[in-house]
Image (cartoon, rainbow, N blue to C red; front, side, top):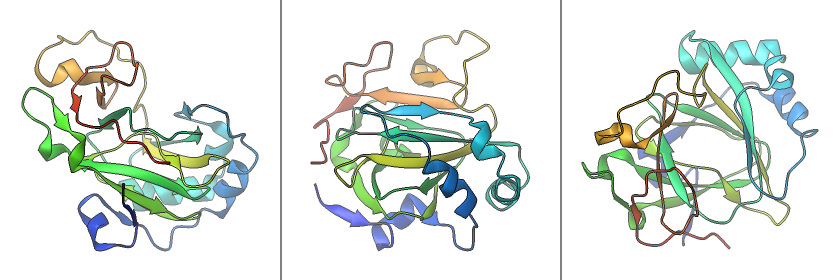
Length: 206
């Protein structure tokens, strides 16, 4: 699969680079968080949120004052396996070089199927802060280097938490995995309990 650069024109429909956002303190904390063999996501991490000045800047500049959470997605990953989307943008801060595989929510059928042939991959260099739009399908980053990746994940507070209601599993709600998170998995992913709707290749980044 062709790997585009985040500064390429193709990225503009999926998100934007956020300039003049100070994240040095957050990145320093990230250096101390291990890269596991598999992929691990933590939605809200006190050590990252305790970098108060930078968290407040992300809350105001990124979300117009909404309460936010700062977590991370670290690990080693080479496959797409699934996509997800939110009713809001997600801010990612590349603590290492990493690759994001992205698509458009508009290409998901009414039944919830989506052909991965529509997706594009982008290299996000270390230190880059990107906003991924709410209409962008995304999932865990893929390795851009042999020793894995670290990615800071900023979202409105409560996103990806456990649902406090039992949704009726029909229409879009069949894809609702957690608070403000809808997911579609590939049949080859081995994911249990996910809505299976990705068709085409389960994209691999070597």
